[in-house]
Amino acid sequence: MSSSEPAIEANAVTKEYDDVHAVDNLDLTVERGETYGFLGPNGAGKSTTIGLLLDYLRPTSGTVRVLGRDPRRDIVEVHDRVGVLPDRFGLYEGRSARQHVAFVAETKRDDDDPAVLLERVGLGDAVDDDAGDFSRGMEQRLALAMALVGDPELLVLDEPFSGLDPHGVRRVREIVHEENQRGATVFFSSHVLGQVELVCDRIGVLHEGQLVAEGTLDELRNRTASPDDATMEDVFVELTDARIDDEGERR
Ligand SMILES: Nc1ncnc2c1ncn2[C@@H]1O[C@H](COP(=O)(O)OP(=O)(O)OP(=O)(O)O)[C@@H](O)[C@H]1O
Picture (cartoon, protein in one colour):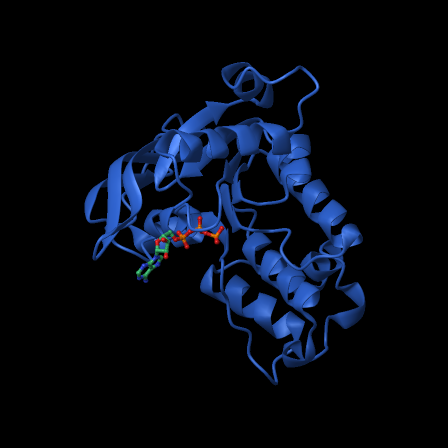
């Protein structure tokens, strides 16, 4: 196994649904140790891309490698080494938060203490509570604790800030930073641009299934000729609106 291979590599990946190109000839490389923010308007293809990386979905064409492995062939190894916070997830009514985390630890053959991970995501007071009674934000925190099991080499987080209060948003940002400091690669999609700006080494902007821009925030600012103090939101709107204007209509 080579640790010099990128954490994520997508080559000419396309995913079609009837006449929709959810992902369109995508080339994407995320190096080991990066924190990479994956942005794009609703329907841009972010969750589809994540599904393709984890073999939840199969590409129409193109190839994907995760931690140097082909997820279609080595799915057990990939899932062992990757922590995933999916776009949509289900929790079991009648099962505690501790049981949810313990279940993931068991499948990964890991001896992490669920209580420690739950404390870390701010659920220290709800370790033995029924996850079926959790609020949206508590569910999100629990799903993140499940993703953190086993100190994964790569974290793939689909909208990790979704449903969280400001404390939760800050906690997730701190966890992303801590995980990156530990040596993990973090790849996450988000619409919370202020947080992306604070935490990411590199940002990719997806629009209609294609990567329309990629780089550091400064590089994206330069690319859009935005002023030096332009926020991530300014740059995002510029990048994604410009394409809509070119085409003369909003699709
Ligand atoms: N199972 C499916 N069948 C048909 N079309 C689909 C399916 N899944 C996704 N799509 C389409 O693919 C495109 C990309 O969807 P995707 O969910 O990947 O976008 P996204 O960038 O994650 O959006 P959001 O920010 O709203 O979560 C959309 O046009 C969506 O309607």
